[in-house]
Length: 411
Image (tube, rainbow, N blue to C red; front, side, top):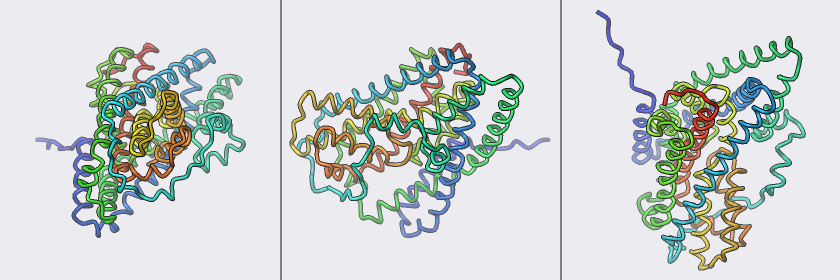
């Protein structure tokens, strides 16, 4: 008689450790220092694998796409969806913040020093110029994702332009390297639950140590907090699933269930880039999207597609204007919408990058940078939610593009 092995699915393990870590951080905040190293090592391991994964997967994906026509078609579909979904998120946030007016009569005493937030940021034109790296090794060392993606696309495209013998050799080498990177990735993923426990405990423990009563902070900024959350839920549970159903002709409920592990990891780590290895695995294994599509759309999405961040920036900037009693003109409101779109594209897939990019939007409409201090108290919590929406938007794009290319998926 054989014994039946009992295994708890990874996403349930993550939920359990996420909650357990939160309780540990809340009740034993002074002991969190002894578990922080686990989360630090886990995040370092994920960050270690991101650049090799992006470089190998995009080069392999683009090389397997073949000619320039196919590559152009994939690129156009991907970017069109990312711009459409981000604009839909911004408009959702814009309508809600104008409807509920959370900044009118807001408690200004909750301001937090913003010394660490820099207003210095590249213009959109400079961001485009910097896509082309002056030194690819420097770009790799500094983790300049757009430059790395650009270089990987070039490599993949021109591999298809060399003679057959070296082309096959290069493809074998890159695919072998990708296999090794994926094996390392799967090994790291096995430690996700304990990493999430440590990260969750650290986040909650820090709030307790800073003297922030989480319930009180949320209640004092309650309407703003709920406005952002409502916008994120509308976008994540209505807009994106509808796009999967209508544009992708796929089952959005099954897709959402399949994405449980990467979405919970994104929620815990607040990092699209750190979640990328799990996102790629889930989209390919659970949804059945080909590596060719996944390796092109997902690394690009982790860098330029920030639905949740764009929605949050739009709501936050108009909230700040309302709190200061500044009535934005129609033209200024259009500038907020447009700048939020560009800032979301330029935001890095790292924790709280959206907060830094918000300085660009505030600057564009002449609002005081100190206004960021009004929302810092709840930003870390909202960062977790908006990162999950960012990642979910990437996965929806992968499904829609795969279906448009005629692939048969499991959903």
